[in-house]
Image (cartoon, rainbow, N blue to C red; front, top):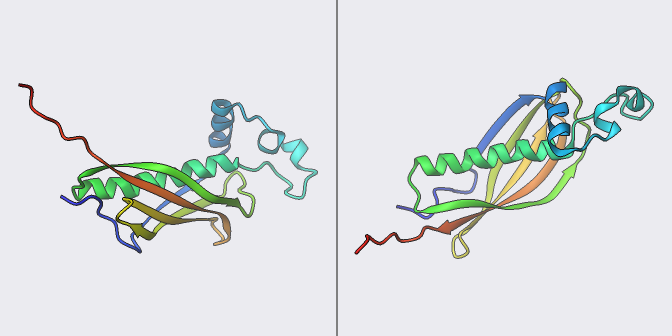
Length: 151
């Protein structure tokens, strides 16, 4: 078995139309009831003109793609347990409105075999092809414990 089945350029994508229900469910789960996300009247006077999705919700969609990449490696048989070490350089470049369809692209950009890590570039684009968010994701491919038979 291999420690990780990942190579530079490996890519997964995820697309989703962001609904009002998605945003309100996320707001309820996190307690982030900012007017930016739940008050159309308030946001009608902003430069955006409408409510916008939480940036953290977009990070959740990014997590979906990292999970898909890990699942692909697991299917190929790896001798490790992959875990997320986090997201760096997360930036929200444009608003995501209710009804926008976003596509998250996760691309392995670096492999550090001695440290058992991969780095991926993440881009989120809306249905118009506009870049709305970016990040870098670090995965650690941790060693599995050796299980010894009971004596």
